[in-house]
Image (tube, rainbow, N blue to C red):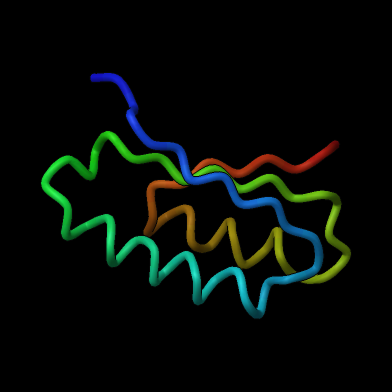
Length: 70
């Protein structure tokens, strides 16, 4: 099945806003019949706060892709 909507979220040191927004977006997506065709992609621009830790915890609950520069 092809993805028909990507939600792209760039972030840098915004974990206090990012996680609540991810939960809210996931709530909206889960109410849509074709939720398997919607993908959330987070691009982290080397945050120095706890963004990576919090997102990795949310990866277990939400269907999101997370990109962090190595």
